[in-house]
Image (cartoon, rainbow, N blue to C red; front, side):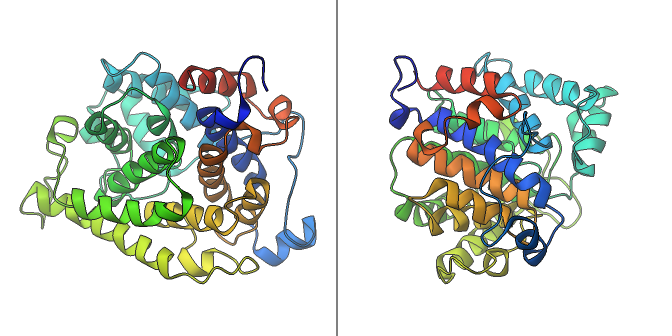
Length: 332
């Protein structure tokens, strides 16, 4: 118990905390291969947070930017997202190896450019879906608004259709796990959503983002993103469940949106009842370890609640108080 809260059902709290824990655990290993990680941490990789506080990266920083923008509710969320992304860009703490796509787009937003001119229109880097989890945790959004906000927060910096679709899938994965979807059913449910949404272009949120050379219709534009995500989920579904192998060899290194989603899900599903082991596996990868681990932690925490994590980690992770407050807000 935490106060009057039951940690087993504090799933938004578990998800937000797990995201930050995974980020902090994977940050030191991001640019190392598996052999290097295991030489430093031993077989199986890191199992505990480093430092006090345990520092997070831009993944958690931008997740908090999205979360803060959502506190005011659905109305005005477009302006709030822009405002909080600019605040992140201006912050002196924005020194955690942030991605160039996010930096360049936010710099343009800060200069007052319309978001359509600021975004990296051809980028599908994982910087969009590594921060989208709060959109899945807000309890009172309609499916249409959840999907629209998930895609729009991506579109501010990453305008590729695969970045949009992967962001929506990441948000819905977190939501469904919070609502009790069995982890074993999750991949198929996400694959089904790819098929259902394949030609749904959310013009209310995306305006004319689809207009570019070689694209005839908005439906053609967005279908490319859903198809790439569907392919990544098919690879995940066919992956051998080998706990000892580098997950990136099966589902990709995670630098791009659909691979970050698939490889994080792979790590989570390999250790679906062992959340800390899932984080350790995600941090012990040859790819974008902090982003893979942060999403793995978000999924594991959404499935198991706050009780998934060692209690002392809450006191050690950077931004722990704000993460806890946001989690309680959405666990009501």
